[in-house]
Image (cartoon, rainbow, N blue to C red):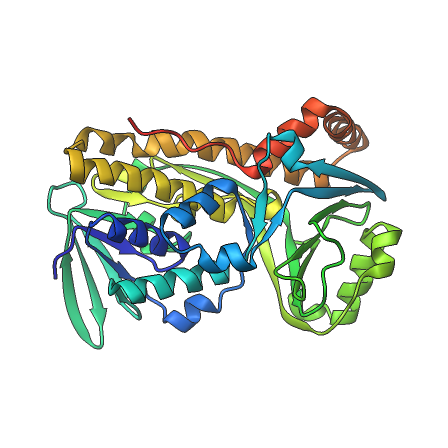
Amino acid sequence: MRTQVAIIGAGPSGLLLGQLLHNAGIDNVILERQTADYVLGRIRAGVLEQGMIDLLRQAGVSQRMDAEGQVHDGFELALDGRRVHIDLKGLTGGKSVMVYGQTEVTRDLMAARTAAGAQTLYSASHVQPHDMKTDAPYITFEKNGETWRLDCDYIAGCDGFHGVARQSIPSEVLKVFERVYPFGWLGVLADTPPVNDELVYAKHKRGFALCSQRSATRSRYYLQVPADEKAQDWSDQRFWDELKTRLPAELSERLVTGPSIEKSIAPLRSFVVEPMQFGRLFLVGDAAHIVPPTGAKGLNLAASDVSTLFKILLKVYTEGRTDLLERYSEVCLRRIWKAERFSWWMTSMLHRFADSDEFSQRITDSELAYFIDSEAGRTTIAENYVGLPYETIE
């Protein structure tokens, strides 16, 4: 088999890159080790920055998002009972975010790829890149009991934190930056109306809570829990009781509870590898970086990587600008580290750290108070939340 760009991973980043390349006339094949149903079954985030919204529109897959997605012009911080509104639209000159589930983004991209006749090979096992440092890289994989070889010009590793792409790069080449947090998020998905029109980030002496949503009838809620907590130890009733405790009284009183559709605990970590490329292999999204979900940056950072790689490859194939290839990592990392900082900051400000002494807690409380009581501070929060601009590739 032969293609121009081989993409490992059929999550939203791999599918989005594939759609953009296909629309530009650049041939690509996606290899995915799971089934399509498994990929669609993943429950993930759903707050899209303006940059990702624009990219989905550019890819021609925004029809359902534009019809069903919920535009949010702000969000709330609930700080030990005090409610503070962050006016995203007013503080950023008209920018906003959209609530539209990652599962739905994936579904739209899958449908578009099928309609375009572009090739995705699901249930491809033992995927392995080869000769990434040469002009003729290739991938071997197994499917239906047969071994295949896919020759290509470039490889995009969009296969997540545990994927093969990063693991294929010699460990001595990569510098790893990591911080693991001593808590996780216990998440519950329920077919209940959201407690608030906008997202609510709550800081409480018992721990952090987040009120999010997927639609007008489906809600997603989170609680900060110890890292060693087990989801099965939390009954629905225990979850709802604890959530009510951590919310301001007026929100707690109107919270609609119900049976959970899905319940899981996600660990929190900050993680970056440098560089994000090895010869003709490029790492995209979670393969190269992880952020705590507090700032809603994970999926959006993957989209900015996709945008950067697509713009570079487009210039390579249309203008012969192979000199741009070595700039991929530095361009991506400039934006990644700013998003890592914001996600770390939001996590540090809103969560309770068991080992934090009283002095550190007072400093944290004072810093947060400065930001929310100052228009300049609220503007900084808003600008980071809606997403920093994508870098131009010249």
